[in-house]
Amino acid sequence: MASGLQIQGDESVLLRVTHSNLKSFSADIRFSLQITVESVKEKLWRKCGTSVNSMGLQLYDDTNTKISDLTDNSRPFGFYSPLDGYRLHVIDLDPASVTSGGWLEDTSLVEKYSISEEAYEKRDGTFRKFKGKLTSQNPSTPGNKLGDRCEVEPGEKRGTVKFVGLAENLAPGYWVGVQYDEPLGKHDGMVKGVRYFDCPPLHGAMVRPDKVKIGNYPERDLFEVDEI
Image 1: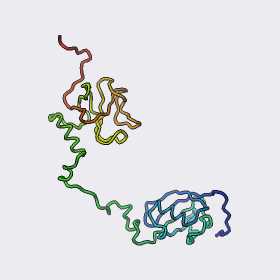
Image 2: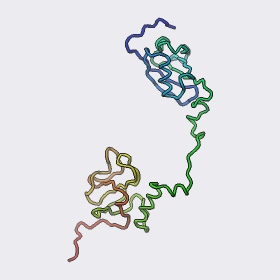
Image 3: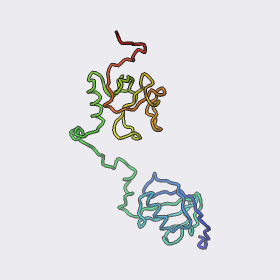
């Protein structure tokens, strides 16, 4: 081991990091050779959850041969002569650690959240209530199916439902994407860089459910005139 290693400038190495408890954990992380072993542990703590005081470190070369145990927290990391491509192995020494027992990897060990039907029915803003609201606008038709004909207020603009759901880049709550029969919209189904549906340019609109009526709304005849 080269205890007299001279570290120049801001030299750093790119190492593959593995963990004793997290079998699926593998990350390529760059470390400065000037920081202490304790600082290396602090950086790894943020990555894998093992506390600094419970962490042991082993350095392996590119042939998977162990080079050394990093036992002195006060030494600069470069003292142990790591090179690009080497592996830094984290050993969690705490039997009660959050990483032990597979809790962070095996989702079957996690208690699942559940809610009763009664409690769900009392909640506002659920998708079930949204669907019911659309259906109540015209009980004879399903109110949430893609392809349903609709009419949008204001303006009695007719079209086809092309999207129903959340649109996080617009505003909270549910939205209905409509393809108008005529170029009365604002886009082609893409809004703020997110594509919600496809339609011809200026035929698309994203509107709130209370503006949409579902029903038998055929396309208007372009040559239709009022009787005199």
